[in-house]
Image (tube, rainbow, N blue to C red; front, top):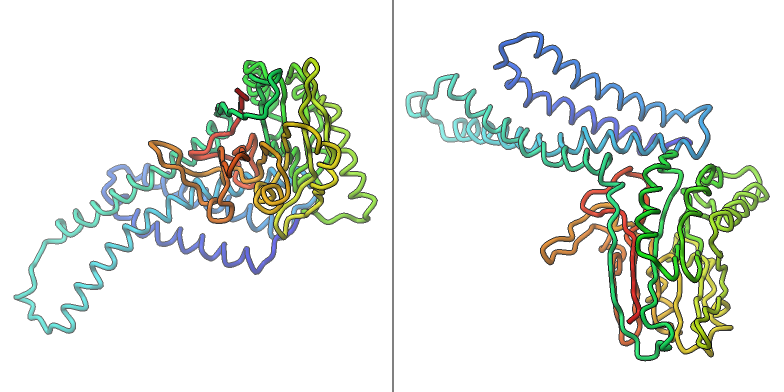
Length: 422
């Protein structure tokens, strides 16, 4: 895995500037510390941590050697986490340093252009000036501690703080035998990002089983890119239990499109292994096809399409083919990884009653409290999380079970969805 120097070199320069400017604000605070050992220790930690992160980015830029490609994703995750934990708070802190510098600059400009005499300029002793500077710097540290604590929580606890999101939806055309049907949806596991933390996922599996679902639907992205990420996970994931059945589709990451392959055959072998893993964990993988779900003498259709996304994401999905054998069914459920597919094809070209999607992760960051629902991902995906309705058709977008890139979640916990048809 190799990173472009056009991206990495500017990033390293920004990091260096952040360090230097942050240190400018920290030095006056250190000067008030009485113990020289504490001063040296803080300075060592400040620059030592920065040097380690710097070295990690340089190693990544040079190209990671002797590391499996799947493990490289984990390494990148640690880098992103380290940058977020130690540099985003610095962004906040230097705002206060910058405010102080602006104040000093304005004073100099007024003095220069106003032609003030020395006696007309209010005089403050150096100790008072230092106290005012320290106040701004201290406020900067306090405010910067908020993103620091949030990010630390997100990368340690937040990414495993699974929550169950519950919805009850009424459909007039739902066959009577299916009233009360409980559907659990999970999406976007990205198993390679978990770095073999089986015990954390076992807790999530127990939470899924506690919902006593009739159906479990997995809506894509079992891996980041490579079949080797699934090693060791089958015994954990096949413990998920559903009274009727477990079904799945592929997501954009499952096709191996985000890596270089020596031959097309190697890439095809990777995809075949990923498809086989769905069977290992007890899921029926739907590839542009439908399955009939029967209770008593009544039926509904469960349709699954391969990934269909707006460019640059691949469009392997074929809704017409998948829907062709289910047209006669009175009620239809669709699994489609990317929610943009709903607006592009499902709404205008089908009478599918409810669609389950994922893909967005809620960007693993956002606010959903006190009536506020916001995430940066909404500017790319207007339907990014939760339940949506147009006419008599519904879409539910799962906020994701796992994570990728940034190895954490802030204000956007991993989700297990429970939809009950009533």
